Image 1 (tube, rainbow, N blue to C red):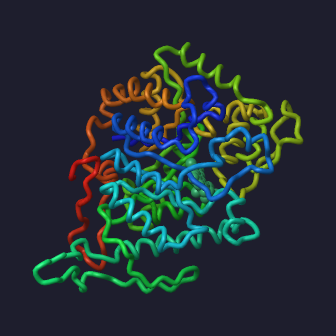
Image 2: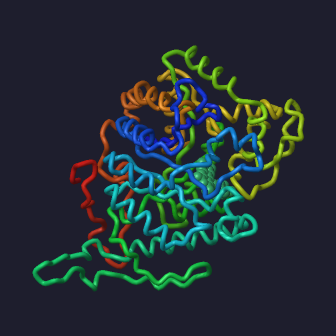
Length: 459
Ligand SMILES: Cc1cc2nc3c(=O)[nH]c(=O)nc-3n(C[C@H](O)[C@H](O)[C@H](O)COP(=O)(O)O)c2cc1C
């Protein structure tokens, strides 16, 4: 069964999508819109929602992007876990992927926030473990410049180990709450971590009870060598950024082949490819939407956003001249530079304008365009062809894109037996078919069921 996620992004997944007449008005800090998106996605049986995040107001020295409200640099957003705490009370099954950095935060606080969200949502929390893709975040945390990537990954690895240790603090049945004896908890059912490592010293235990899922679902986005290795070791879900089937298949095979070294089987790590879907009842309808949106991209904004993606200032170059050499690693998101370079090579060399015109309609994700049958054909090809277990589906204009997908594409996927018609259980681990982590200190029972009423019903 394929898995589907969509971004909780009322802006839409085209750089100019928010300017389209059908797009949401007044998106800034708008909780009602977030609730609407979450409910639409849940009604369509999506596995989960996604909120990307950073810890800074970005692009202030780049007015073209700053004023354009570019998707990944939004200057005013909710903290993801706080937002999901609110959404958890308006939904009952959909999972909640929240981004949180291991470079700038402390494991105790992060472990506590995700454990709290898991309780509040009845077992639907998911952590997008990032090391921080934006150098400008560093200056808000006492660093003069972006922490070097290998150090970020080393710290991240230890950070996650500490969080897991903290989440194993309590047996699921530690809180006996026996009124007659006056014994609130069973003191033999708590474990103190006593971690002392290279980056952290954390005694524990965590002051949150064992969460319904044991651990939140763990997701990683890094695409570099270090990112892939960490995904094989730690993650339940890993993002994949690819612009062709062959690229996606190569990434899929490369990451899956690393799992046995960590004693894991191929289905313990789901690979999630980003796609941006343009769907209509006819191809003409889709082409018209595409043309409307492309016309809304100002060239100076296009060049500025492409510069950001490839981590190279392209403003001094001729917009109709060739893309400069993009070889070499970056200190931010390697995946976009690799993907754009490959795209240019495949097409015999692109100009800067051609490159941004291809990338911005999808913000770097693969574009899937057409009628419901054409969209389902492509998703099926990638799913059956060993390129993806799951799709992170973006829509150029919100909420119309999600509505159309739910009405037109989801039934086609269901008809083919590729997508669920009902949720398999109540937690995100149930939806994704993932095992529940066993607490090594208190092996049974593996998890507790949520006690919190969600959406008015006890689960
Ligand atoms: C699809 C995708 C989504 C990401 N989302 C975020 C995010 O929300 N916040 C963030 O700080 N980094 C984000 N990243 C950055 C990664 O977590 C990682 O730090 C970065 O890609 C550098 O590692 P790499 O060179 O291994 O790719 C994202 C990366 C990808 C590919």
